[in-house]
Length: 217
Image 1 (cartoon, rainbow, N blue to C red):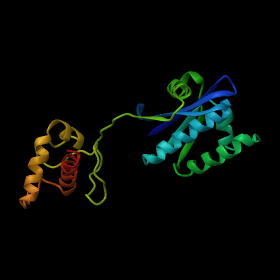
Image 2: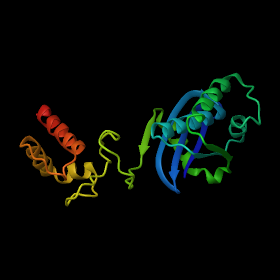
Image 3: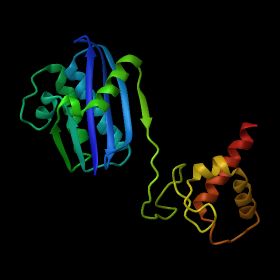
Image 4: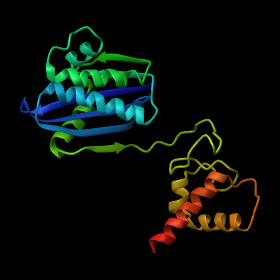
């Protein structure tokens, strides 16, 4: 179960604004974002921005079925349809957030007290101070159902699963700590080796990095 916490704020109000959001899976932080909103913003526009950025982060990572929590009663109640959106500067943000919500269904909107929203508040403050968008990604390696080469694109966090001494290690770990294995795999591929433990996407991954190394020299 994923939870999304969002927040936003300004110094003063209106003033320099920032927004922040954080995603948790089973109480463990997986993704977070902080963003500078603008020089003359209100707390409410920043709260909405925190929500929007959090939803975008969830969508980018194919995360659905969210519990969405924030300490802005106005934003939560407007998103639930309990309050009308009267301020012109919030109507566009409200509409954008509604569109994004439809992409993470099912979801639940929950109002929480400020003391339970400290991480998102910290990220919003970081946005105020940075005046530029920054994204934090918390590395998370977890066992997932195996997918075929055609169903899953190769990336650094993918786990090498074929029987060998490197089984269970991420591609990035192998690349960073055992670069000689890239050469070993590449030489076997070029030699026409049909060893069953070498899967096609890992060979492509190795060859791509070897190619990059050559082009960079």
